[in-house]
Image (cartoon, rainbow, N blue to C red; front, side, top):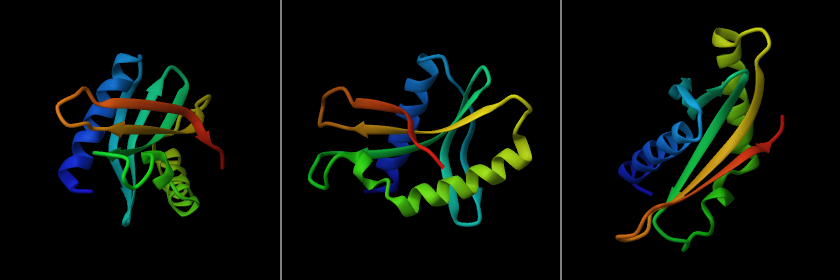
Length: 118
């Protein structure tokens, strides 16, 4: 996947979440080389969102690319974000957004809420 495709997928995912009532509070939050694509808030719920974008299904559904190792890395970065920016009463969860960009057609976007737990 090219960086350009990934960036487009993150932009589409952010717009999708905003239309669903989420506010994007951070993009590409980093801790060293590890990163969370989007951090979104809706009232007291904070979602750490991993976005996977594909231009086809040749490598399988985009969500299959979120391995246990990737989940663990996201959890580590989420802990750092919570230490710095978390607020009392916040409820945290891990979401995933799959974006399939199809030639000429509307992108297919799937939001999986509470996709995994720590």
